[in-house]
Picture 1: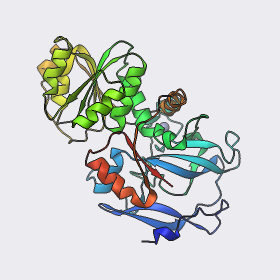
Picture 2: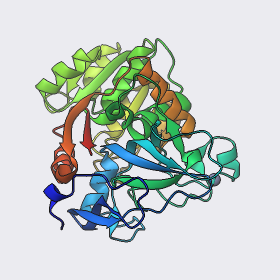
Picture 3: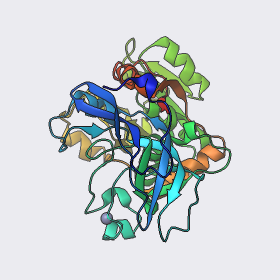
Picture 4: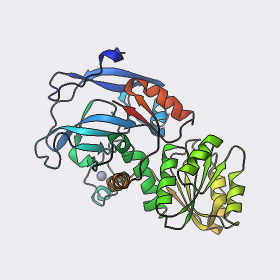
Length: 359
Ligand SMILES: [Zn+2]
């Protein structure tokens, strides 16, 4: 492990023979700030980005503590979503210039398959992996990336906020609007409203005029969720949320449930849906499996959507929302060398909003 205090300056932009910092997963629950060779000048169609901020996600927690089914090799540079500045552009790239502010799309899509051509990037048939989870990620000073996977940040949006666009915001945008097709005036239950995506879902649903019911694990989070605009907040540790939701909706149930907790809440979430209601889920942070009542599923005509990641269009839509004032809730900012403190905080569910790692 290098001396962190001695490695706080960026390498020169030319980067020939220089080194840079990289937060590297070297074993289960072991991330080191290493000095590694800086990349060469960007190739044709590539840009070189200088990373400024990383948003932490549950995907980082899984990567950190180890995940049996993940196909990957250590050491691995962590970081699944980031904001950066363009440091250099390769031959043929005209869409960016040095100094432009950008975010990276972390799914290494092929760009040519049917799904990619149709803009359904997260369904790419030849994806080479998710950066920061399967292949080296964003938590390093400089990265060469295909220019087609880099998205400009609009004026007025900070890089700290923009770092939440590629995964936290875009995932929610995709879940609510592409999958669940949430409409103005509908009622939605947002599970775990204090999480990074939960806070985002509350704000996005309120912004189009929905009634938002949310669950949290303690009373201090309840106050914060109310302040974000949630109409009803349920402390799931002291009340059964299924019963409260039924009461709040006069036994009708909600139009949409935003799930990501998984086995701990999934069946309760289904019970909260009205007939024909939609449940959209990602994450499943409390475990992998549950059983569901198939009679209930078809008799109530539920529609259940699995959702993973987002399209590049969703990232652009997210940045546009930020530019219009729908900004992320930031729980904590930590320095590069403190990333494990941030991950432990995320794992312990103490957060309200996003944890950002700054360079
Ligand atoms: Zn593809």
